[in-house]
Amino acid sequence: PLPAVRVLIMGQDPYPTPGHPVGLSFSVAPEVQPLPRSLANIFKELVADLGVPRPRNGDLSPWSTQGVLLLNRVLTVQAGVAGSHRGKGWERITEAAIRGLVAREEPLVAILWGRDAQSLVPLMPDIPTIASAHPSPLSAERGFFGSRPFSRANSLLEQSGGKPIDWALPS
Image 1 (cartoon, rainbow, N blue to C red):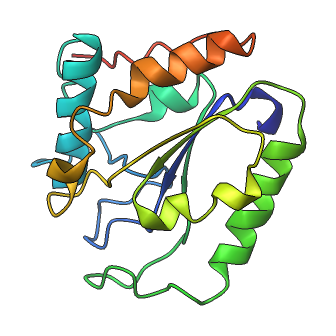
Image 2 (tube, rainbow, N blue to C red; image 1 turned 90 degrees about the horizontal axis):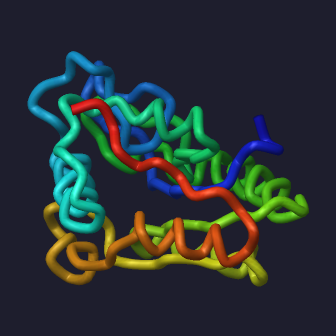
């Protein structure tokens, strides 16, 4: 529910591989193997940042139950064609959702991975943001690795009077 959201993790669009998208950005169903490479990189950074064990699967729903909104900028994609539904109107819908989040009084931290996500900063002028390169294998070495988004998000939440997220996933 909207009032419970404490962290926004902004993605670009759903995984284009059939059977991978589950409605939460970056997440996949527990049985999906191998993990999408962006998600594998997220887990690599999670372990390096917090020292937690590597999660046993790619299901990020435990984060969402704690108030992490895993939202893609575009909500659909043609199978096999990444970015195929950009510019079809989803951006207006996700921007409206972000405006709704920002209008609340509850503490909120935004984690913005990549240029697409960072283009939303003007919609969140007073929201603490953590911006870095996207976790994609094409860009992770250019600033995603070592960015410590999970510990930084918790620190920012606590500074604004919010409760930290338990980022550890079942291992």
